Length: 384
View 1 (tube, rainbow, N blue to C red):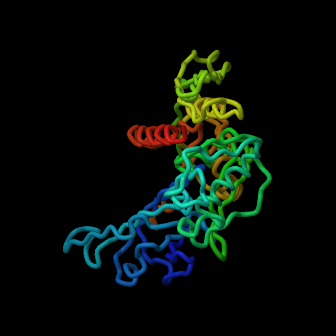
View 2: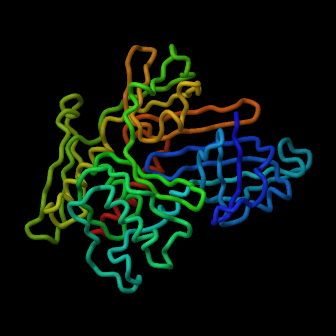
View 3: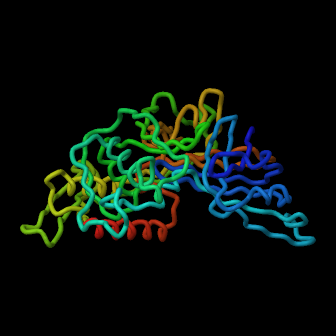
């Protein structure tokens, strides 16, 4: 195991030597979402001096950046004389995320170049454009290089154009920036986006997840599958019944369905409040497509994998890639890698868990999912 923890400031300048004697590391990277992580280590004075607001934590695995981003809780300190694990100098736990959390804190302004007090009542519309172009445009004008100076993220740039995605449209107003980007990514070919730390700053990158079903295979026979849990559920929606604004006359109604899912399982209808008055540019169809993707029959597959010379997380497969897992029952599951969970201690080594399935395949508690859904719906109300 070769893992290092390095603290940098906002300008990516190291604040000292790599953090020594860490005892626990837990990091979950997610497809098209910010990562979450924690690290625990002795609270030495030189360590505490680095753990300051605004600084970042960089997790380096095998000489490559695995996850890097702001420390949300730089110091969760505990101390107790005679207390196991908390004896002098005490211990400190760091909670951190990756740099995708920075744009996640922004909303989509209808007029990004104007002051907040000058925002119009209409929505921001980008019609019939490549999905990658739309995502890059939303990011750069709200928090990237072309954003207003007071909204611009320091040392944040866009990576070169990847040339991925299909044509789509977007209609948004005061929605979460990344939530809007995810909607475009789903409707525009299932593309991905992420941040990468470079030698000079942070780059926002749009990419096409790879089909690695033939090369990224996990099974007991290959010796790279330590344990597995598998759950297949019925879809929560097969027919999205989308409505446009009630103020429009006539009011628009659009149905987006998944006949194959309905035939395999049964028909499940869901009312979706659309983000536009009509479907002239496919906005309401996009809303229905997103609802179907979120409610598709989820296959939740959590695997504890063992890295081998032939197959390693981050090198041979990544977030959003399609992989194959052969169950002991003889069934082979093929789906997207939704998250990769790295746990490590100096004594027990690394444990890598991949969560594979639909967007509904998640380890988030039900309350977290409810809050996220309410936030999405409120954003849609504002967009109208």
